[in-house]
Image 1 (cartoon, rainbow, N blue to C red):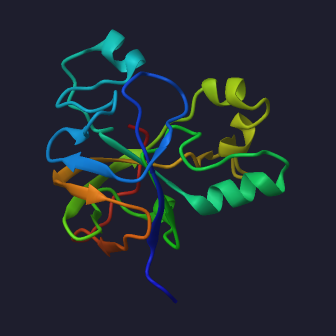
Image 2 (cartoon, one colour):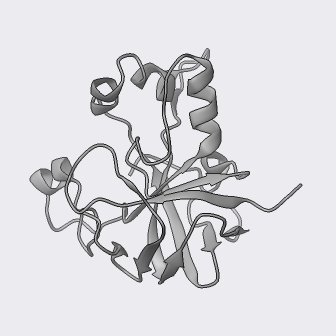
Image 3 (cartoon, rainbow, N blue to C red):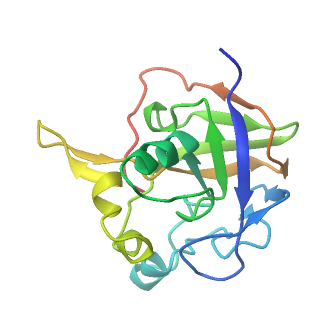
Length: 181
């Protein structure tokens, strides 16, 4: 099996749902993606700022697996990298199964730590009607399943480009499951 890779990178200086793709993004330790509206030491997500602007920003970099795009495409939804608001789109890595605290080395320098799951919101249905039910739902056991990617903080900065490999370093056990952040 080949190493997980970055298939696309995206950023937007404004708070919009989708982010345009870029040739590269620069991750800045402790802040996030240079030039992205969600970069900052404290929370930048608008609903979270309204609740408490002093919260630490655990959502500096949003990652989604390209396999999710494939899956929803099979259900009739046309979703491309960046359109669900992610900064980094990966392939070959089950992001949703990673424990909290996992370290991802992306490309030659950038390092992020996984903080939790993205909590998909109604904006997804405004992007494409019915898509929300594909990325958040209750399974047969009644458990809430969130599939809209993971959030992370930047431990070490660096440039990230499509084609970069992703190396996974699991935290010490016991592994803590991802929760909404």
